[in-house]
Image (cartoon, rainbow, N blue to C red; front, side, top):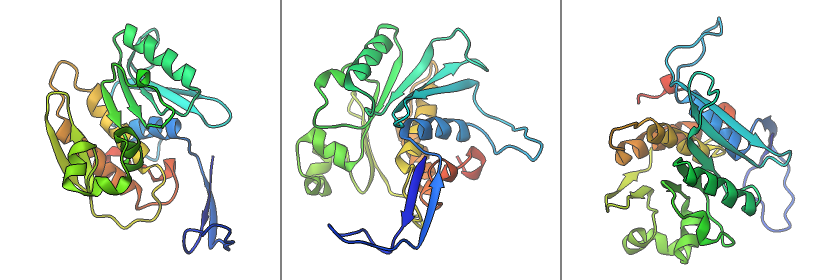
Length: 244
C-alpha cells in the first residue's frame, strides 16, 4: 500500500513541510506491473461486472510483506499447468532469488523482461535477457556515467535514454520516441505502466516479428495517461481509454 503526502515542493534536507493532502493507494512495483498488464489488455468492466476484449493470459504475482514481488504471465484463461510465457522482474527481491529465478526461466526457454538496475547487480542478472527496461538513473548506472551525460546526443548513443524513450535492439535497430504531452498530477506507477504495456506486445508477438518501435509508442502513451491521475494502480488506464 502506497502512502502519499502531497506537499508544495520537494523537501530540502532537514526541512519540515505540512502536507496539503494525504492519500493511500494499492501499490508495489510487481503488483503495479501485473495490474497494468490486466487493465491494458481489456476494456473497463461494465456495471454488471462483465468486460469485453482482453488477452487469453492470466497474471500471477507473488511477494513478501515488504512489498517485494515478481509476476508472470501464463497462457490460458486460468493458466493451470502452463509454463509462463514471460517473466518480469524488478530486482527488488533478494539478489540470490533473482539469479535463481532467471536461471530457471532461461533453462525453460522463457522470455525474460527485467526492469531496473543497481550498482550491486552483477552481470549474471543480465545474461540472456530478452528485454531490459531502465530509467535515466538506472541507465547512468549501467553506462557508468553521470546522468547529465545522457542529455547529449553522444550520451544518448552511449546509453539508452533521451527526451522521451530511447530504444535499441541487438540487431542495431534504434530510435527515440518523443515524450507525450501530459498534465502531470502524480508520476507513481508510470514506469510500471510502461513495462506492463510493453510486456503485452512482447508476449503477444507469438510467431511474428516484434515491432519494438510500436511497442514503445504504446507503452509511452499509456504511461503518459497514468501521470495525469493520482495514485498507483488506480491511475493505470484501461485499454479502451487509449487509442491504441
